[in-house]
Image (cartoon, rainbow, N blue to C red):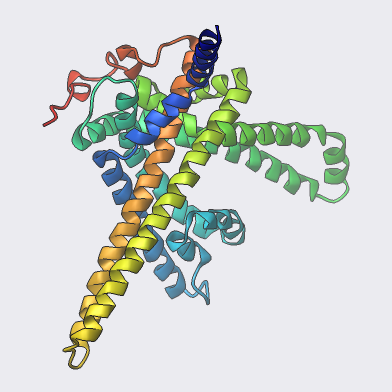
Length: 354
């Protein structure tokens, strides 16, 4: 009887863990480190940092700023410095628009390919190569991934612009004050709608693009589906978001520790060897070697950051699949869940693995 009770308790715990998606997130965590996705994410981060650097140099040359932008320092900083982005955009909104708009176009393409690759892995349909993932992302770029990013942002900007214009109207002496005060409920309702939209965007914004990657849906349909999932299962959506953030934090912590330890050990042993047999002359070779070493170390940091980015993408994919299964009852392991009929056959053919 005791063994049967223990077995039943173990089965119940395992069933509960499986029902809330713990095993699915663990699988997504493991599969996030596949080579193709990490390569795409690393390339995207490298291009992003180059754009940060170029725009920062141009901005300083133009004479608008006397000191280097904090947004450029944010590009080289750790994940914790992302909270500086909001303050920087408030201080330099035009610079922020010039910075972020091209990145939206870039990550709609690269992120779409990564999401597609991870979605095919999560559903067990196929293992897509980088070229096929990029082909899917290009095919579903304008009406899919880019629109899924642009619609919520455009909606928020439109409501904000209406409230801004209403404030300009209230600046009219006497008439604007009177009429604006009487109809103040209009901007107040718009403000409530904007606040609600920001809340939904914060909770379910990472689910918009996976809707395109999983089912090949249009951007508007993907956004509508993600919002309906969040509103139908808000507690699940919040829980899945927290699990995804926990995965990202844990991966970032472990990889930072590993990379820092590897860097310290390598540089320490190299310095010890150079001290024993030092043949440096005028120092030119030393500067050259230091530059080349910094390039390799920078590449290692970018590779680790790419892996962390892929973990976030994998968490968003499995969150979308679990919410869709909970709300719509669509099994995430069904082959049609990856949109096999929505794209050309070449995009979903399995890649032969050696």
